[in-house]
Image 1: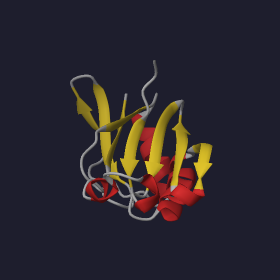
Image 2 (image 1 turned 120 degrees about the vertical axis):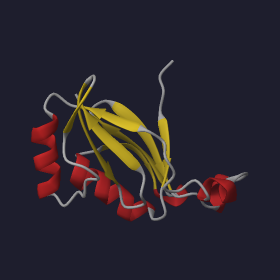
Image 3 (image 1 turned 180 degrees about the vertical axis):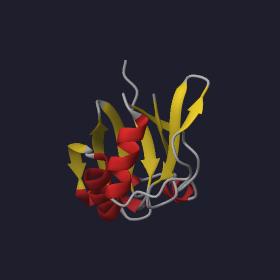
Image 4 (image 1 turned 90 degrees about the horizontal axis):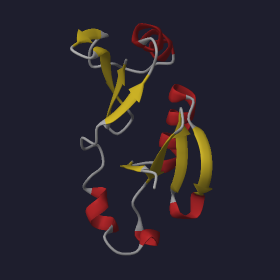
Length: 120
């Protein structure tokens, strides 16, 4: 069994482009009609989607979850290096890399306010 995180976005095409350009996400499966895709960031799979009627039941409830905390952690070897690279790409961080009990961390948000963390 493998886990896939599900992340709801307000504009699928913009989000897909943002994740590809900023985080080098690879598209594994693309479902443009349903406005969703399975992407991979360093081997971690994320179901990125814009809730809509083609999803069937509960899509209106899913729209309420856009931009809510989900807790995606991106494990990297060098937080400072990744932080600098992402800043060059225009990613806005909530705080600079800081020492935490398990290593270093730096948080940022995507286009819809979903919070992600670089950590080592």
